[in-house]
Image (cartoon, rainbow, N blue to C red):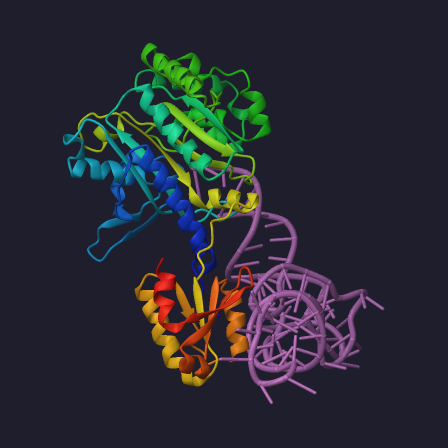
Length: 416
RNA sequence: GUGUCCAUAGUUCAGUCGGUUAGAACGCCAGGAUGUGGCCCUGGAGGUCGUGGGUUCAAAUCCCACUGGUCACCCCA
């Protein structure tokens, strides 16, 4: 085999696409119920957009982006996530001027050059939603409820919701100072990764998976204890509304997001059905992002979720889309009927019926086997005798019954 | 980026202590008194054993390198 798909980029094969369409249709229905409209942005953007929004110091920007110079020497990046593009488009097209609150969703491929493993690809697919223009906790909860409703609609139940508040531009820097100071005292005992983060991103240290780090930081101060009044009130309101809505959650004061633009609410939905990559969805509030990217000060909140990880759970739980099989297979009993068979198949298709026939000049037995393999509901057998008498035998492959039918009635029979 | 394990028909796998024609199941193709699928029966096609090198009289089997996959770290959806 000469050519293979690039590492971490997978084909979605004909045997899998109906499942993908089923999943996408289900989420589109839910988005519609929540009155979110689809937005489709380009899969590449100026590199600066991502560097600015996600953060120069994040791993995504620092070492995972597919960045290249195009033939005009502009620096282009394949999008590693969806929010930055949506906000760019929101600003560029003055979408916020038409109404105070913009509710959009997206579905599409994202690109990150990480080492592939279970639940992690280099080209992967995300769906997500953004509510841009509202500062209220009600909006945070609608976004969380929207994500959860999609999992519910797909029959996924084994997930858990963790929430936190990461503060705002006033209280977070203050907390970071305090935390950094505490961490510096034990710096030499922390893991290498954590030591590097003490100054740049101390909150990530508290989220370390290293057992020793966990022990050492067990009694460290948490952001939730240092929120200012506004952030604290917002966080309380989110918790109250989630409870009122009946959405179970746990507060995790160590939860942080990998993107820098989040403020106040941050959340993550995880599943025990996945491997070590157990995050199904993540999101939060980003009140500074629109302004950061050159727009008017506009609050926003959103989430992003991985489709492949969702598919892994559906597969594991045996949740499958209904199959779309041909309604009728028309078999030619001999060569004299092939012309009639082909034209009738075409006419059925024009009339809106999924119809199939044999293109390989195969024996009747082979055609019957093919009809069975295709899971066609009916088989119509037509040969020279049927053409003369004007009547064919129509077999129902599901209940195994067979009846005579006038060939001239075929179209009307299958139209409804 | 670091590490783990793995690599044999289309697929999932077996292959003894290195030993001569590399197997199974499923799938595929063709038949089963000649015009009817599923189950069943018969037959058939299909593999330079990932690639390259080494050890050996002899390598799918042992060793090395590379490539690819996999899972974990990391990161995150």
